[in-house]
Length: 417
Ligand SMILES: *Cc1c(COP(=O)(O)O)cnc(C)c1O
Image 1: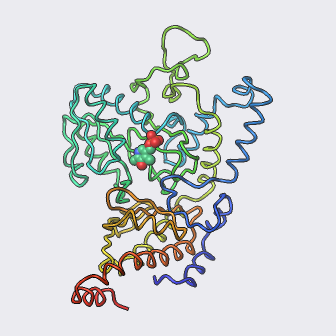
Image 2: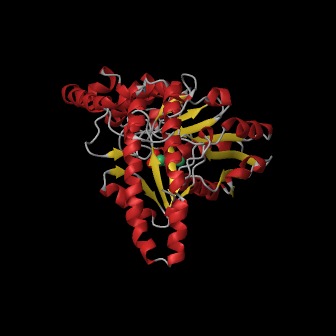
Image 3: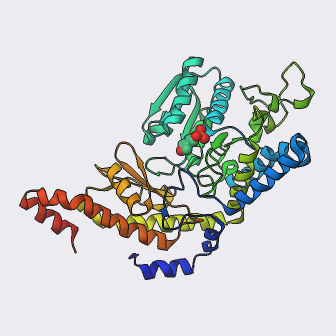
């Protein structure tokens, strides 16, 4: 598709998700392409937090019971279960993604105590790698890090757990989970998936895919707000044998009996540790409700259309502007962001921001453009591509002016009209 303002307006006119944009409190004059890092604020979040604030003021400590606050982590977990294709009782909201990863990864190595290896890929999120390094050291396991394309073949009978991010935070590459699970289970290993860049933006089928364990982030495509609590998933068949290694009082079978011995709750509730962050949970609830209201198949189609049109529009400019598109071109192989490599990526991101386009620099040489289909329009896409062209001209023109004559002609010819 050729990106023109008219084409984009026509696409917005036909967009069944267009109405969701008005449910977000978006700043005027900005095109926000960083919703994969911090989602935009749902209008309902502020209203609900205000209401919770009034409950807090009026009912004080009684609010925990009176307003169902203590049940919220599980209720919200059940809503998330629908979003990630899991069953009720398999998901709970608690802590941060990193802490949840710690719980599940340590739990997995304890369950497969006779196996030495935690396996992951080199592109995995550094924070996830740090957690795994810490566990490997404390547990005297080996953390084996292989290139992403060798992950499946590297699973063997010494693998306790395979840990991967479904969507690569740098490249946006989407990994199909089923083949990983098939090989892992054939070898007796567990699979732990990080859904940070996939939950809320594509239909997931954790149960159907046979995924054992997963963690996910509340503040990206779920729009839960800065530092929103995260979630974790434990497949039902594992729940009986799988223990939270952090024995916390809220995860106790009878938290308010204050017994001196720990007895875990006989459910996913045992994966809580301390008191839930109520105001943050309330804000996340508003974001999760919006995603539940949307049809995730439609969200996925729009995401593929936005990222695809962005890739199509950038491709012809790559050679002349020292850009490389690092995200897969086939829509089924990418999530909802597109990353461009440029030797002056930081300057490129700053230049875009100066013109109101918020994309994110990722060291050392990437700029990431996240397309959150619930509030990004095709018109935004058009605006962003026009500004990108302008900023690239600003960066590249002085360089070309100083290049030897032959090179200038060469670039001009390659860049075309
Ligand atoms: C954003 C992100 C996280 C976030 O972790 P927190 O501990 O919740 O801050 C974790 N993993 C991946 C892959 C991410 O992209």
